[in-house]
Length: 319
Image (cartoon, rainbow, N blue to C red):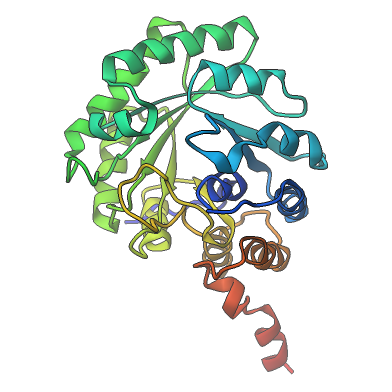
């Protein structure tokens, strides 16, 4: 039995995810150019910048300038990423960002130390502090992210029980601070997932917390991003993070050249071919993907931006 959704919501993370790892430097105006192009595709959520330490992630040293520079479109929510209170305060000071509170943890303390320079206990306190800041500024806390939910280059295979533990742990922090998380984001940070492990993890989390909406954040490190997304859809998942043209990767994942999120246009193409609505204009998205490749100046892994959609081919063969 499958439980394919009739519609899938896609949250674009290409600008933030991609420009954090490109050797660059990528000019600020070109980052803005890509964000403006993505705003024309029908995407409803775009993550546009990362408020992080510029010494560790120099690709986002110009986050403030980028956020000031792009054109806002009605009906599009623009988000940013932050990993600590300093980054959160910068985002709160920015204009034109939709502030949705998010808290995070990981199944792998080894990765957490590399990614945020803190362990589990310190992270719990950081998340408590962030929830308090959210509440002080009237920002709803809606999302909890669990990184390395399918495997870790530093700790190996991650048992399903540890994923459930990590979810329970972060929800406990939220509950203690009076926050009601709605979305659980399960991240395949280092590309360890396969369709069966996706089904096992999603199934276990859905069974324990059936009232929560699950989001999948899938990296395409080993070429299974889209098929893993399909496996998630078979389990009823209808919310995905993705990255135009396959931009990006995690700079702390422990292997050089790690791929970024599942490619947005490849994911949209698959949904379109299966009759699953996304609300996204695939042709415009392909144009944005080709623009992204031009901006970074090297080939990107997206397939559909090279092969194109099937619309024109079907029109030709229909006559």
